[in-house]
Image: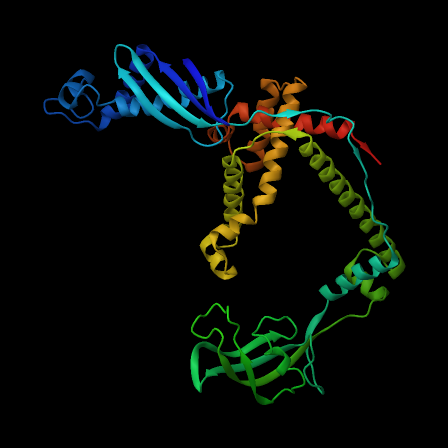
Length: 425
């Protein structure tokens, strides 16, 4: 039961919650029923020792810690909800009183969602600009299709050029001594990519297959291998092969191979139609982003930094999940990219702030517009989620609550209201 609420600073509250003696007793009994199977006391079969006997042997408060922890998700969260407070990170709990005759008193300190004000969110004027598709755009798309159909062939009768793929052996030396990680056999290097040390690729251009030569370069000062950073090096290189992509001719036969059309003109017309559809969708997305940016500008709130950090945490977890699907983990990714965690998290900062602000605005609009969502609609949405992930409804409810689903649906309705009322030209 909520006893009192005290705002101690911006978005930070101290809430006193009382749980009755009867509620405490119920929680203690549930803990005893759960733990008794593992309790062995001389004179009783394992799992058959009476609760009073266990408490006499181990102390009256033997089950209290687990009982109190089990109370928190129900009674404390209900009290916060009753107070109209919504923590953005896990609150701090302090048991200030505990007695079997009077119950439990908690002092809860929580960083909560801010108070939000917003107005003039209907009828926002936004300009939508749709790109006009030109013949040059069609030719560029056709060129991309042509390049995807290209095949790698060995180049003969000329020297290596920028854009060629070369097959090389190389061995690197510093002060005449070979260094670790500086040699490779039959390595495929595409010239012009800048993948190697500055100057390395330039010294292969103009060489012919079969040539053996020396490449002189200096490692950058900030090179990832500290033992060679900033040092001049000599690479002994043998060029085995020069390869390049051979592109098919763009004609009616090419069109028949890559599409369901018979002529180049038909294929170009289809490309133009699809590019126009893509341009329309892109323009709609850009207009929607402008609209939501305008909504954010109309909102006032002192947003706790914890909300932004929590959203970034969520984005990082999503990124990690996608990495795991590729057989990688975040530590490997950071190592490959040469990034520190702080820099990695900063990449998400702008988007996280925008998402947090927009959601606060939408939630407030839903409240002001008295948007409601029925239990049936929430259950239907949960079933859709279960079907999409091929899991049971019960499994979904283990992860998300009906109230959170309702909140998402209310925000979606608020978003629709904004878009339907917008004046887009």
